[in-house]
Length: 104
Image (cartoon, rainbow, N blue to C red; front, top):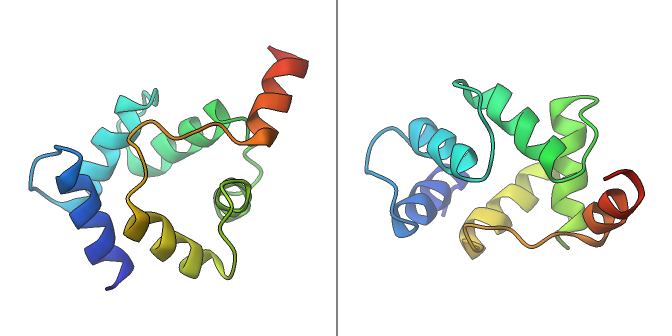
C-alpha cells in the first residue's frame, strides 16, 4: 500500500471526513494541538508540541519518527507509521518526556 493510501485509510478510520487527504491530515494535526490553517505550518506546530525543535521539516519529522521507534528512510518510516495507524493521540517519546521535564 502506498503512503497516500495508508494515510487516507488511517485518517478515515480515525473518523475524519472522506475529503482530500491533506485536508483530513490538517484536521488530524489540529485535533492534536496545531493551530495553523496550512498543512506545513500545522506539522511545524505539532512537531514542536512533541518536543522536536523545528530546524527543517524533513529533519524534525525524521527525528519524531525515529523517536517513535521506526527505522529506515523517511519515506519508509512514514509508510510504516500510516500503515500502523497509531492512536489519534500519539504516545510521548522518551525524548519528548525528557524535553518537557527539562524545559516545561
